[in-house]
Length: 144
Image (cartoon, rainbow, N blue to C red; front, top):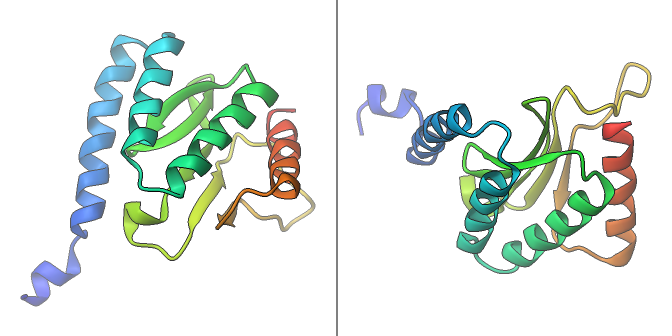
């Protein structure tokens, strides 16, 4: 490859940007349509390999139970949950960008602030009952 090809976005990053462009078009048509957002999110989860598919399904159950006010949708081809059109939290599978672990991430609208230093992303390798409790608490705090 030439230096010019190496300096740009990876194929995975370009694919994610293309997915985001499609999502923005769909959002413009159905910003308030929870069923359409949830359907798109569930389709993305179904495409994931195991064990991430199972983790994403369980996260969806936890997040929609704990924070029903969040709208399920996709964001750069990932399951995400928004309030007032802004992404509060999202799940990124390890496979998506060739990472070592899946990630549960939180964006600026999440109320997780603790002084001048706090985590906004968490590595996930398995969902145990203890981890699920921590996630539920984080999501509750994020929407408080």
